[in-house]
Length: 244
Ligand SMILES: [Zn+2]
Ligand SMILES: [Zn+2]
Image (cartoon, rainbow, N blue to C red):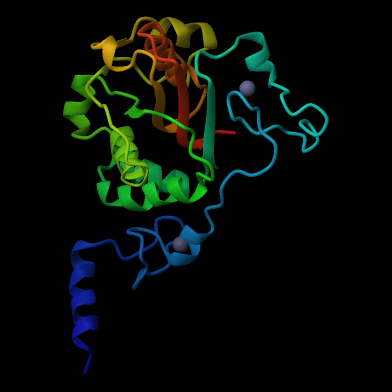
């Protein structure tokens, strides 16, 4: 005779996923939706030397050994508009699977687990005055029904307990995915895309800008430009994952 808990679990399997998205193991009492305990615990933060400005990992472990302020080539060629950025995890499975489900398949039940990951890897939160997510264009928001960056910013901010602003920085134009574009095309694609509606709310403030994935960094940099133009004192960028 199965226990009541086992019966409930079997019933739930009808409506909940039964296999881990990454390794296809059967899920039982695993704490994170869609992933087995083993895969989820294999998600490890980025470690090792990284560019102090954009946060991208350096290929060589000794890059910062003798000059801790050494910037990567991209940042030396063109200083980002943000003060500094850091990404917490490499964008690879199972986290990549989780972000895909979360962002493109509406599995917002993963927001808590992803927020926990951000918090766990955030060893030293920067000293900031307010938290802002990278905005979606209203038409994209209507399609997706949620802004994944706002959900992450909200989960992170449940610990930081700062003002969370998600209506002031806006995306004026809808842009297509940037992955196939060259740097010049990406910049053109995003130019004048972001604006601050109420500059007085960010003037002289230190802002933490939150996004899910950093690929080229162009999006967060354009947001940072708009915030700096509105008078923000500093813009720090925190992303859950970065492509490496
Ligand atoms: Zn698994
Ligand atoms: Zn850099």
